[in-house]
Image (cartoon, rainbow, N blue to C red; front, side):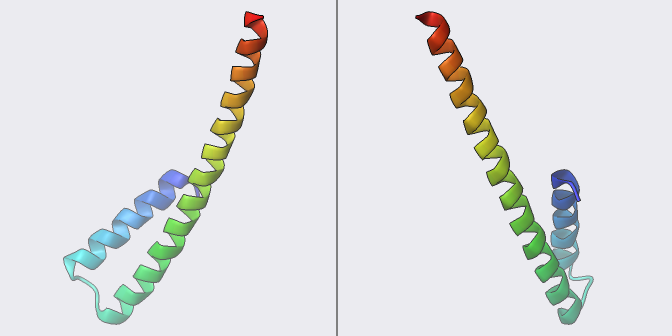
Length: 68
């Protein structure tokens, strides 16, 4: 799934659990699914952050080189 779809699914899970429209067993399963999706989202954000840091360093090096 994509980050956006994962986040949307997490929102659905939270809304369903908070609404009380599911029993304890279903809520437990949904909670675990949401936790796993949150972990995936966090990993995705870390990867994107790393890429942005890398690109920023490259850009800074190019700008510094051009200014000499």
